[in-house]
Image (cartoon, rainbow, N blue to C red):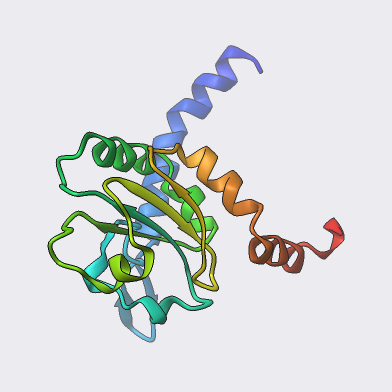
Amino acid sequence: MKPIHFLVLAAFLPLAAAAQTGAATAETDGQATEAPAPFAPVAASEVAFDSLLYVARPVVVFADSPNDPNYLRQMELLAENYPALIERDVILITDTDPATLGEWRKKLRPRGFSLVLMDKDLKAVIRKPLPWEVREITRAIDKFPLRRQEVLERNPAGR
């Protein structure tokens, strides 16, 4: 690519980003609709366990305190690549209060810091005692049987 082409592309890139954010609010039937809520962690107390069956793939992060260094590191690693998690229908659930024995803690029984990857059938597939990068999480999710089936349904030529 010639240097001048690169400069022209770099000059128009911010304009393209602004156009996308402006297009996020679309007009339908004369009413403005807001863009979908951004991907963010959800407290375990706000999500019913059974409500996610075959709807979303829970990635649950447990810690004994919101100041746990492993918890803080895990949340930093996850924040680096939310789009990869969104693509895999992930819902990020956090629980940093072991005193409140909620539904998620009763079902998954974590000890200290714990990262639990679950499939859409709500079965815990992988448990990790240390933080994982999004790349490792997405590769593990891509090996789940239900995820493989989803990928084949989206792209049948890949069989």
